[in-house]
Image (tube, one colour):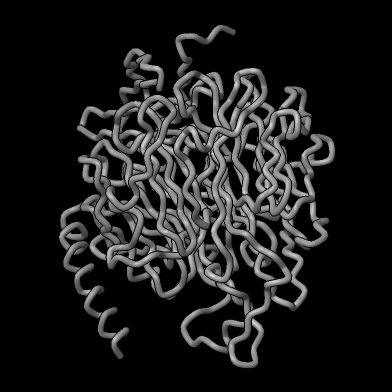
Length: 547
């Protein structure tokens, strides 16, 4: 009864917030997502090696990525697999985009079918040769695949010095010290041993919780500029231990360098502020992002960093466990964040669900970023001891109402969104190059899902690409229309839940026919402002670039 009363109260608050918008704003048509997986030729099946013993690593799932590995301007797809963690045997998969709404599995030809017990993926051109490289996080040995530029990759893990034998979940390439090459941050989960596994709920075998195991330290690898890295975690100040899941970088304080956010599972979240010289200070508690609004530690899973309210600063969302809200942290422009989960209308709908991949993405191109979240429980036998949670769960899509509030539009966004699945990794990108955001999902012990956005490109848009590829992770893009719509964004390596998004930045522009675009690079370089027609891609080159 208490839960029911709270739900009614918060629903009333949400209605008070959104109703004025609904009355005064134009009623744009909404979008619909279509499951295009089978038609596109994506037949990837994730395996977790579940044996019935309910061993702790099994239910965490794996990530996925949109990337352009062959530099042809079309987003390819990479999906991470797991298999039996004691004897991994399920290969990852790479699908080449054919440019006609279909894909071809070229895993074997490319040489990227790693069979480790996979978790996460990030992408970045670490050696500055113009080709996107791939880093895979595993339970055990991680893998760095160097892109050779001919459609194939080489495993350079040992040679590069980023082997990492911990239980790594996710990673991100970024330029920590503004020296023009990409460093690597790896989030490690916890210290696990199968000998200590085995949890019971009365007579029922269940998956243990993360608090049964001590947290692990993350790792920071500084790029030496010669194709190798050195572990520089201690000297960089990146030495705190947590149960890291989601990791993302971005310039939250607008000082020109990339900071690090880590979503931790039953440990306070980290915010590492970059001091400008490649040294970091952990200020999660001080900034207000370590805990939830009620001061509790959450089960941080996924993470995203984007400016959802168009005030020129990056905001944060973290996904959490069932009976916890997914906190939305609004950047207050003064170095601090405020948890606005309930005020925004996103908190209460997340309460009965267990959430993973997420993203602030403008699905309807109205110039305001919406929020997409996938869900799915840990316990495959949840129905035997819990009357709230379901194992397979629907996805959620919240429309940005431009007032600081969101409205749950999931039931009106196509049957593919409300179909229950046990979803994990999620990536966002325009795979068909039609000017709207599509979604890729890696489902636990199930087939992957490719959701095509139908209707988002009814409104204007501009897509911005940064060259060379490494510089796309060292730039902030600004767009502005004549009617006063102003947006910023930064491409990121990694993010969501153990996944990687399209690094081309797509901006919705509502009805604008022209837009002004410019780029600020991390090294201080500033592009000229260009005014260009909408509904096209524009390319910016770093001033140092020479073809």
